[in-house]
Image 1 (cartoon, rainbow, N blue to C red):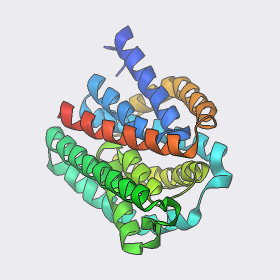
Image 2 (cartoon, one colour):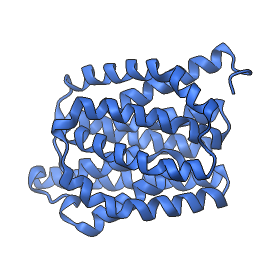
Image 3 (tube, one colour):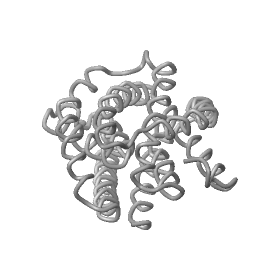
Image 4 (cartoon, rainbow, N blue to C red):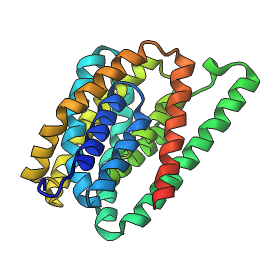
Length: 255
């Protein structure tokens, strides 16, 4: 895998690894940048397999940083939808081309971003944002969000924006969002390993690549950990939603 790597490729991969770490400890939407960068310099399917172990390493770092802030009630509400989402995602991944996959994911994320924008405008008009009920109160919506996250993460490691949108709509405080997301993605990404292994997306060369990129991921995680403490709740939510929308646009533009 490494023989044909130029300095430019290594720089791109290092930046992508930094984005992984930053997404895990700060704003999840930027993880889509890492997905896009990996897909630019590696074949699409190889990039999916190479990214997964790096994501798991980032999840471990995030859990270590925010383990006390997670909401297991939210995690458990989402999990029933994850396994069906993973199964459908694996079947979809085996059946369609990369372009179709990008278009479906990009359109879905863009629609979710618009939906959340509408909800926020309505909340401002009523001046009662904190009292507005979030999706966490609805079990069907939580299961649907879990299925969407499972599908997106299985097909393109792209569940970050989906979960960001759900957790923002659920009204979780900043650190609770980060802690809940950390536990959720650690569990889900570990669940993905057998699927990815059966599809032969993970192999020894990709694991060596992940090992080489781990220092860059840790730098990104440290930067995110330092930054998030300087952001107020509203700034954090706006940044999270903005990056989710940018991620959707990036998927559609590169499809």
